[in-house]
Length: 356
Image (cartoon, rainbow, N blue to C red; front, side, top):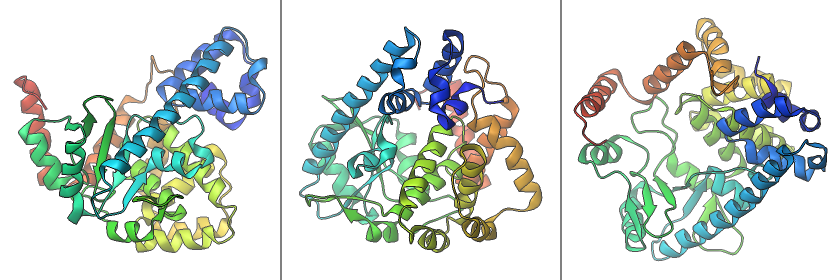
């Protein structure tokens, strides 16, 4: 049983009438799942905040205010990134939260993100890095092993943090690690991106690709731990983009062309199961072509709820199932020999107290 958070997402009006004791668990779940500001914004936008008991109401209002402040900061950060990269002849594609915000998508309302993610062509990533360094960003990871690992195997540079604003940027040249079993064509994603209004180098992924990137991030690149926020994002995106009758006709072929059919299958399956996402029957049937074997799917059906659905942040439970999904995420990210080498290296560094 997931507890009050999932109920509140599905029916915000039911959350408004909860007593203080129920709100205590709900707020702890929401904060752990990074959904507290979204919940506050939803209640505020639907005129339900006045029905919430005090002092919970005041806390939710603070979360909504915090979200608005966060959005202003994120917009300014995107402006500064665009200014820093103006001299580099390349499109700069925003990913995830920054893309949702700058596109004006409903999913951005109340969504808090810790950093800005961008995607640039691999051939230009050196120029992009140098331009950012010249404008005040500095590497967060200085350990030589981490630097080599990111640059040789990962889909992004080591993260950069601005020296004055302390904002973080992740610079990607593709959306999954280069050692991953799935290798979507980053050049195709960039070709399909659309510029933001007002011109300049800043772009966002096309609607189908936003969904597919979110699916790949949740169901292939990560361990799913705390992934309810990501699934809620995908539910919001699917509902919004489905207003275009052509969206579903484009989504499944695009997933196949980018080698992301399996993550999309999992997205549609679990978004419909847990959030009631209105997925057309023919889309589900088409996605079924990418389903795993019967045993693997039965295992995922047992494991995914343990990671996605919070029970009590102080007593999370499901530890073994979460660990299996953690192992799965690493298994999908890199081949066994590289995984063994990487984990043993990191373990030895921790054992001997070295950074990284």
